[in-house]
Structures are given as structure tokens and as C-alpha cells.
Amino acid sequence: MTTTDTAAITVVLPEAFDERWSRLPGIHVEGRRITIDPHEYFFRFESDTWLLADWELVKSQLLDVEETTESAVEQVALDFIKAHAESTSDAAHVLSTAYEVYAYLFREEHLAGLGLPQITAEHLRMLREAATLMALNKVELDGHISNVGPCWFFPAATSVVFDLDDDMGGMLDEVYHGGWFNEHRRIESIKAHAALGGRLVHGCQSVPDQSGGVVAPYGASMTAFRDDLAAFKSGWIEQVYAHRVSPAA
Image: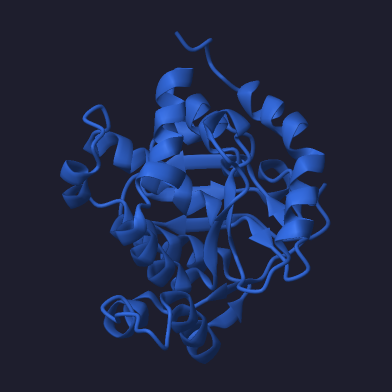
């Protein structure tokens, strides 16, 4: 369901990605170089613009800001986005910014406090890679979901790429959207996601529901978002799982 004529997206990131991402249609990984054919990669690709704020500015002016009784962290992030974010059609810049955001959020120093000994630094790398690609997904202010790629369906995509069984895929998803973002992590996440022009919103209630997530603009209609997501998710999840190389053990 592609309606834009965007050319291939190519980006070179600081970290080499797992070449098994190439199992999914429309994406080719060669070390640090990632090439995405939007027509093959996305289930829906209707918008080739994104809202970005400079990551270095986020680091220097926002990450250390504390909320107060007069100004909640969400308001601080919203004000920062209004002041500094700009629209871009440079998808490579989106991916580069997202890489920096998730290298920060999924850093190894938090492993000790996670309370999940089975989650390792290698799992954090999986999270960084999948979340970076997820940043190309998009929700409009009216709640319509304009861009949907395989990484919307986080456990399905990671099971295909990293050969995870259902239990570990679900555990990784919990770290992504649940256990990792306790209140301290949630506050950190809100500030960091200002670089991607919004806040991280999850469509799922739990791992089995697998409704994924997206960085949505503040003010986006969550009712319309929920309804749009419910209409398409099951068929597309099945298409992602179809690319498993072999059944998970």
C-alpha cells in the first residue's frame, strides 16, 4: 500500500547491523550500510516527511532538565519540540538520529537494574537495531497511521532476524515496551524521543497482543490510532512471520 515515489533510502550508521535484517523484504544490510527500498519494505508508506530535532541539542539542553510542579516532563519535551524540531524528508537523517536515541536509551549500564538476568548486552543490541528502523513508522495528528514497516510488529520482526523463539521474543518485547521503561526510564525516554519529534506510543497491552509502537506527535488522536491499528495488524504480522528461516525451537 505504497503511495509515495521515494527512492531507495541509504544510511551508514556508527554500528554494523546484523546482516540477517536482509531476510525481510526491501532491506539490505552490509556492515554499517543499510539500504531500504520503501516500495518493498513498507506495508504502508504514505508520508516521506518526519519531524526531527538535533540530537546534540537534545543532549545538551534537554536530557538533564528536571520536571517541576509547574512543568511536567511531557510539557518540557513538547516545548522543546516546538522550539527546535523541523520537518525533513531525509530518511537517512531520521535513521541516524534514531540510532543515537536508542544507543542512549538501550545502554548497557542499565542492565544491572533491569531485574532480568536473561537479557544481555547482545539483546540490547537487537533492541537498538529494531528501534532504529522503527523510527521510519509514522502517525499523523489525526491518528491515521501513514507509515508501517515490519518493525512495527516488534516480536515478529526480531524473531525473523535474530532467530528468537517465542518466549525470548516476548521477553525482548517486554524490555522494549514494559519493564525497561519504569518511571525513571519513562522520563528518560520522553526527553530522548524529543529528537524524533514526539513520544513513544505503544498499541499493545501485553506481549501476546503484539500491536507494536511508534513515535507519535503530541496531540495525535489515540482513538483513531487504535482503530486504524486494529484494522490491519493481524494480516501484516502473519506476513512478517512468513520470512522466518526455520520454525523457532
